[in-house]
Structures are given as structure tokens and as C-alpha cells.
Image (cartoon, rainbow, N blue to C red):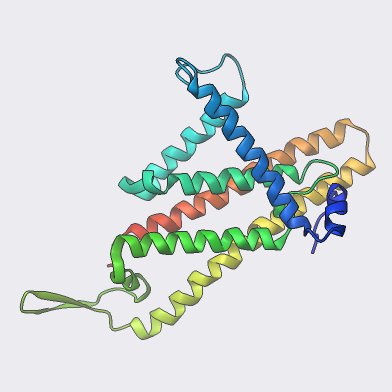
Length: 244
């Protein structure tokens, strides 16, 4: 299901049986891998990466974005942020590139497809639950069982009595699975609207006005990638906390 126009460049491969969403993902992955290769090559030279570039460059922009994400990760995910930051940064940049590709005439970004957005929602869901289980083991289930109303001390063992668990457990499980849907729909709906507006004005008015909407579209693409990464950080941070 294609939710936005501008996918004509994928038509040939689509006729060969390659779904457009896989083509969009492959293009985004290729761009990110190429960028990573270039950056690694630059850092490998003597004093590489020590001094910032002069003026406004792509490297300086990305370093600014990374500094912002790192600062947020420290605040939201706490002392263990370094262990999980690569996942959050990877989610952000992959979604950002995919969003921006949707603004290129003749192409289409992965965020134009529900398969893409719900897949990333599922990945975020699996990541933060894996983090919670890794941190707390089986005690992670306590986060789904409501507050501890009182404690029982039997010998040297303390039991946290969660009398509302029969009510909280099924509700929390449903709400956590719903995060996959909310993450996917939020990204899909916003990027569909963004790409639709840009496509309409590109076809209706002279060059200057579409350029303005392309700029606004790029801003929306950045914000949606940022919101997705921010929510993933929040979910990971909550999974790392002890249940009360």
C-alpha cells in the first residue's frame, strides 16, 4: 500500500517483484552506510575529528544533533545511557533519512509505508522490553502489576504485595502493546500529510513556493524522527527504573 506519490523511480523494481517499501529501506540504508564510511575515513586521518569544520557543514550539523541527543539520553536514560544510545541514534537517523527521501520528487521514503512505521514501532517495543528484562530479570514484571501497597517480611525475605495486580496486569500489557500502534500511526500520519502538502504545492505553483514548503517539510521530517527517538528514550528510561 503506497500512501504518497512520487514513487515512480521504484516502479521497475516493483514490477520485478521487489516491494517499494523494501526499495525505500534499501536506499536509506545505503545512504547511511555511505555516510558512515565517509565519516570513518575522515576520522582515520591524523587529527581527524579533533577540530570542527569551518562554517556550516554537514559534519557540524550532525555533531550538533548528536550532542543534543546525547544530552537528552543522559537525562532520560540515566547512568546506563551509553549502552543504549547507539540504538536510539540509529532509529533517529534511519527515520530522518527515510522522511527526507519522501520529499525528493520521483522517490519515496520508508515512512510513506505502514509496514515501515509499524516495524520501527515494533523494534522500539522489543528494545525497551529487552532492556527492562536485562536490567531487572523476572522482577521486570512488577512494572506491569501496579503499586506495592504494603510489604511482608518473612524471615530475611521481603515480599511486595501488589493487591491490584489482577487489574493492572492485563491493562498494562494492552497499553504497552498499544505503543507499537501509536508510534507507527503518529509517524505514518504526520509524514503522509507532510509529503502530500509538499507534492500538491510542487505541482500547483511556481518554484519559490514549493521551495518554502520543502523547507517546512524538512523541518517536519526532523521533528518526527526526533519525537520517535525521544519516545524510545522515555520508554527505555522507564524500563530501567525500579518498580515501586
